[in-house]
Length: 193
Image 1 (spheres, rainbow, N blue to C red):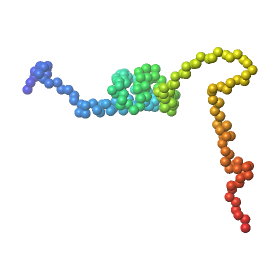
Image 2 (cartoon, rainbow, N blue to C red):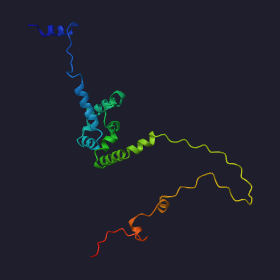
Image 3 (tube, one colour):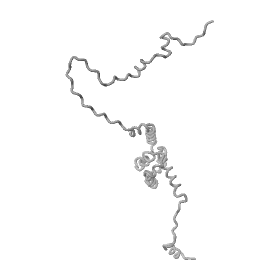
Image 4 (cartoon, rainbow, N blue to C red):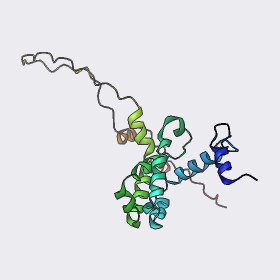
């Protein structure tokens, strides 16, 4: 049997193979776990839970949150379904935000703000996506014509369109409540004997 010194000498030689860990699924399991965790950060209630259970006081957990910032790179961001998680991950880098999320009122505030963002998301997005029409160039005003006894010429602009109330007055009154006043009675009556 070899002595401990001989075993140490054998392990120090460059010809001895080093044992490296080979992930059986090439990191797929780790990828999915980190993706699931980071997407949980989109929920203010979960962040509140982490704060209440003092996860944010653990330096190793804070370092893990810093490590997870690689999810903001384009090659990883395409896998995220809840983009608010990246915003909250960025906020969690701030110690003031981490301590504030321990209070239920701040959790509710974050939840409400998130709800209103989602509620108005389409309008907010369209505001920034749709092209705005360019302003019409102002044509130079013609010089004023001296006043005379002639009536003013009709303007080239069209008359203003009537309001919806005016449209209602222009339509025929075929409603049953107006037929009675016009002498038309369409109610079914029993025929007398």
